[in-house]
Image (cartoon, rainbow, N blue to C red; front, side, top):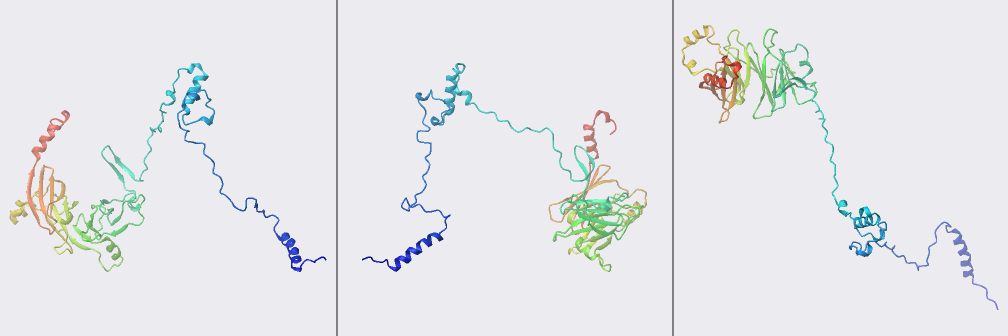
Length: 388
């Protein structure tokens, strides 16, 4: 008696072909021949063994050097022995020529020097000792034809000062191009074409980092002091307020005018006149407030003379005319004290000690004319003998 299959088995047989038809035919079938376990890939064995660098014995002398299976790191020995076998001319050759050091050539040294990049400054004069150039940062207004001005540099602040007959220019001189926006100050005492150009200098304040400006008229002796050029530039926009302190150097003779101005640090400035007289200009009082004061430096003999003798001497022709050639200042030991040395054309050095408060003391004169002449004669050439 035959038995019919169960309905559940018939349904499962019908679903199996259907599931196989749904499966993606492009999918790679898994190979279960290894039992479903995977092993790591085998590492390649290195051709270098423990005997790779063992020195060869005599049995390998006849082997060809082209056989790489017997290379052991001493290839130059095999090459030399093979060369001796192939050619009788190299029978006595040794491998010393192969062990010689190779000559490595260095870089070629160029004999042509590369020209240095210029800073754009105009060369005025040059010799073996110094070079004089025009600052490339000079404003264009000062480079115009016919413009006359006095210039100076403040290396501690990196600023330059130029004074014309009507204005004063202040700018940073470190630039390699002309400055387009310098600080400009109008002079309260403009000079005519027949008068000398006024003098000026930049001043540093010890307590602050501000830079000040002092202006001196060469003919009238008027002085203007700006304690800070930053505040002076801003206050100059208001005409009703004066940005600086004004003063005057008194007792100037007719026809006498300023010839030079020398910095004396905390003691102010030393003003040299065309007559040879020297004056000390201070910019602050004993309390440190801006104030302009000036006094002429006199010798002890002039201080002890009577008033009538002084007037009589000044009225005489050439009595007050001195021949000052140069003025130099240097700092003394105590703070605020300076020393002024004035050298005349007759070989006399006049020395004064100055104080920050404006007190001056004459230390004496040193006549070195004879000694100076003796040294010049000892070093002069035969062609100039007899002229000194």
